[in-house]
Amino acid sequence: MQNLSELTRRLISSQVEFVLVGGFAAAAHGVTLVTRDVDICCRFSEANLMRIQKAFVDLHPMHRSQPDLPLELTPEQCVSLKNLYLKTDLGVVDCLGEILGVGNFDEVLKRSIEVELPYGKCRILDIEALIRAKEAMNRDHDRITVKYLKEIKKQRGQS
Amino acid sequence: MTERNPNEESVLKEASPAYLAVADSDIDLSLLKDSLAKTPWERMRANDDALNFAESLRAAMEKRNAKPK
Image 1 (cartoon, each protein chain N blue to C red):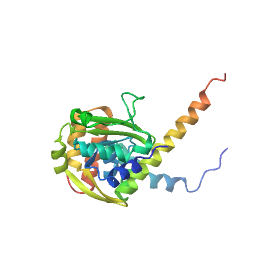
Image 2 (image 1 turned 30 degrees about the horizontal axis):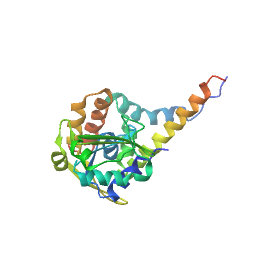
Image 3 (image 1 turned 90 degrees about the vertical axis):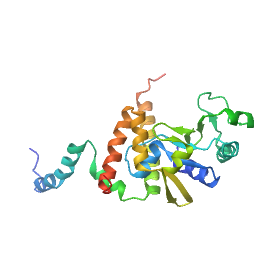
Image 4 (image 1 turned 90 degrees about the horizontal axis):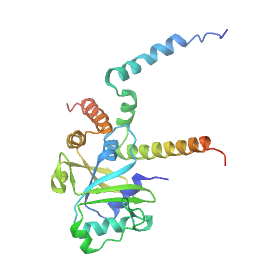
């Protein structure tokens, strides 16, 4: 059973400094395409990475590229990490240090909006920056997502 | 011979604007409008529901298509 909402809730409850990006951010904006993972842009400081580890500690977090390697971060590893691709019992979480088309975490943070969720406030990449990120990625499903995001802007009178 | 549904014409007329909206933009606008009426949290939950439903369908199809041992 996948539960991307619960993964997001855990990140917020553990006070992880992050911005929701990617397909799940697009879903939060209103896109009706289904996404299979949570993509976040986060600060790659030791403290923040340890908060991520703590958030998922009981969900058997593993490195997605090495499925047999559990997530057991050390301070030394934290210094060299640029991205963190995780698999948990509730779904996949990709933690990214920067977003193509937008920039590093501080740039992404500037281009985010705050959304009130039942368990706390969540920062989500704003629709314009999300369009830029998706256009920069330019995969088939990114191009479809851009069509939806532009239509949402139009429906909200933002075009 | 199948008996004609007396409401068929009006049903089709009612359905046509949504159909045209889809054809115009590659996007199902009626689904999009439903989505925009929800809160971000409701949309995130809807994604989870759809994802799990799709997973259960995929598993059911795999089971159906599995060759008996």
